[in-house]
Image (cartoon, rainbow, N blue to C red):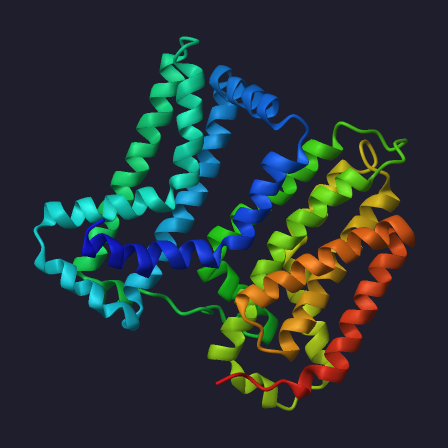
Length: 365
């Protein structure tokens, strides 16, 4: 690997996988450890997308969202003043810069490219030349288009910076909760969308195959909780945004109860797609009481993660470890005291932690 490639790898590729470690861990666990007979499952999935244009378009949509996430990450790095050293690449010929950026795109799209390779290996021997060709062409188009976009951004960073819009533009939505939601809508829309597709999609696919008379909801709750864990990654990003841009709010004359209610509103809005999915599944596939308990447990889990993040400056690795710990705790509560009691315990704990430790927070320097 050349020096330039090593610099780009350490500056962009490594931080990307570190930042999204929780997402990849969750996806890998669901796709290869949760499902029974993973090899047969993925073989059936690949055959399904090769034989169905609708499924293939859904897969393309998921790949596009992931590619958009990658391009947004690279763009943010290029706009960051601390990454101004990347402007040295402008001294290279455009063909060399384009090749370097294509390599970076390939590294970030590696999980998708590896799965696409499996599709090619399965599809070609069976004569599925058209869908295989579409898969290859689609990924090549994504890589080339992303590289071209970043090539222009690398050459004109000032114009890109000047076109960035403010977080909140509508005067109607200028309260503190709407400011946090606007941050998610403006800067975290791709992760939010990918999480919603993953969570709502997997919950719908798992739950629709059972009837309300089924007593075993543990597996459905496990998948739902994995999706809520992915949502908890947004908690860490919102807290980072607050402490870097909105630190004044902690010293403002607002009561603790109002602060907690504001956060409660924010995370209720973030979980709205999951709530709607559960409502659509009830009562045909999920008992209404179970749907309500699922929603309360997921909501309580996010509130608790927000309360913990509001009272200590956790590093990302520390936050992920705590999140995994409470995932197992929540599943243990399901098996011991039931979902409703677990949801009540999570919400009460979130309120208690927020009440007694919020003002004890002191950010690390």
